[in-house]
Image (cartoon, rainbow, N blue to C red; front, top):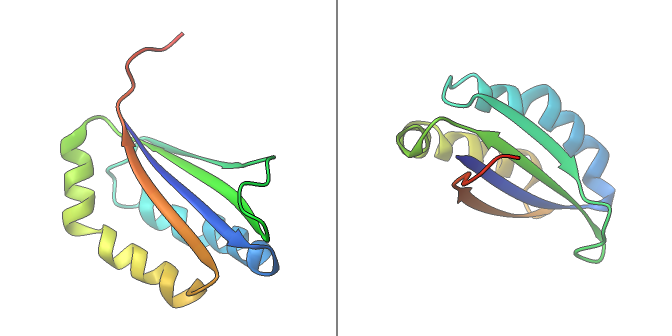
Length: 102
């Protein structure tokens, strides 16, 4: 399964957000022990004017691990993002089932 988080971050806040994600947020998410790995990707397309878009793909073994993340960790970690970057980003989330690998 992939927990996919898409973030549109304001251009003016972009650099600080990237550093914070790499140094703080992603390590905190990974420290839950529920995810196998994370890939952080920057979109080369302008998906929202005035923003830069990033996608984080957190891989996990199964849906039960995601439920545990949601129940025990998600609120705290999302609040941390809001405390640091409130009003400067738009986020969406999805849970994807891997159906094939080639």
